[in-house]
Amino acid sequence: MTHAETRRVGPRRPLQIVSPDEVRRIHETSLDILSEVGCVYYSRRALDVLAAAGAEVDYDTTVAKLPPELVERALATLPHSFTLGGRTPAYDLPLDGEHAYITSDGCATFVREHDGTVRPSTKADVSAAAQVVQGLDNISATSALVSAQDCPVETRVLHEFDACMRASEKHAIVVSVKDETEARDLIRMAEAVAGGARELYERPTFSVILCAVSPLHQERFGMDLAFTLAPAGIPMMLYPMPILGATAPVTPAGTAVVNNAEILAAITAIQLACPGARLIHAGGPTALYMRTGAYFANVPEALLLRAVQGQMARFYGLPAGLGWGGTKGKEPGVQSAYENTLGMMLELFAGADFLFGAGLLDSVTQMSLEELVVADEVFGMVSRLLRGVTVDREHLAVELIEQMGFKGDYLFAGHTRAHVRELWRAKLGETGTYDGWRAAGARGTADVAQAKVDELLAAAPPEFPAELAHEFDAIIAAAQC
Image (tube, rainbow, N blue to C red; front, side, top):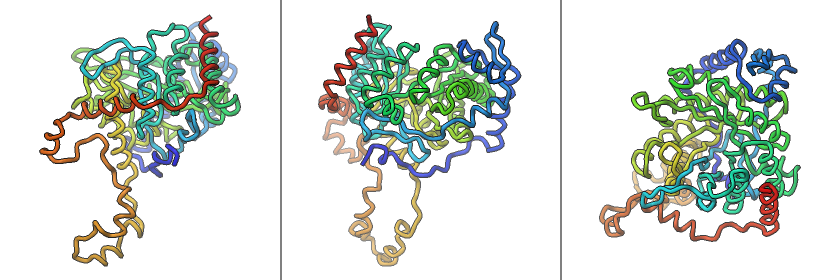
């Protein structure tokens, strides 16, 4: 059985935070903003592409105003489903609306040890996180969960990709690629993994996050990277991060418009230049805690916004890869559990194909490997909820109910044996008695999670071909010259 088969949840009946009419109103308002206000593009190539297609471009201010029909033309060229390739085919992830995944997060710069010690991150930490992700059945893709700060800045993203590929067979999400040179080197490394350019196009081993800058800015590196990555078939997550009351209106509906307009602005430039580019409706709207100005990713308004974003993705027929996690909690505990679980449930029930964000604490600044284990357990439960209730003759069990009548012997029935493995089973949570728990040492959940981390790190990583390792080393060495 492939990994994706274990992550199939079937046709979705997504939760509606806003009505279909309100979804269309957000879309139409976004079009109005783009045509009347426009968007800032710092990429000269993006401006040239838009101008040639009929946008009103001011090269002095770098503002492009996009006619609605231009946006709609770009939307018409979007692919609606594609696959994120694993290092091996067993870990390929189809984005087709019938599977749900979670992935590790990225970009933190500190590591929280189990004893609470916090230290700067290294490449070894990137590798350790990828190895833990490899061993967790419910986490489907890896990433540079932290920065490889002991590696040269000019090749750091290559070292991070190298660490992820060596320690895991799963798809890699690249967070910190900065320019076209790095992108070309990443493509060469991925082609070596896939077996060539055509093979990479068919099964892209990595995807990339491209951030917008709120409000209504497309950064130069993001646009220019898109023009380099799209022809190679690399999927791109379009990732606005508007902040309610700071870089977007304080009202969730207003921020939904800013968020959506930024995604449409990116789609338009990329699809006009590279029709058929694989794009993912992504992002992580957040909020300020108004008393202190602190960044909060998991306040109810931010969670609602991401759920609305899931609805907008379905409206456009795009895969939804939503930001998630980002707890303000400082340790694996009650706060991180309730914040992250609420976000996971709401976003997946709103139709997200995958969530990007496991494994970080303190507003995505500290890596916690225990948090990966907790996310794996929670997502196992949420996946079961997403699969819902099957109502057919076999599952209604009418004949069995008639046969049993008033007897309570269902435990020994063949029907029970046939279906018992459909039930969710705990891997992390406590399932025994209080006395049994005390007798076993009364370990807390974080301690059990750490034991799982230790077990996974003690295991041998998946085999990485020697010739591929040599090729990676050569690409990185050449980039450092």
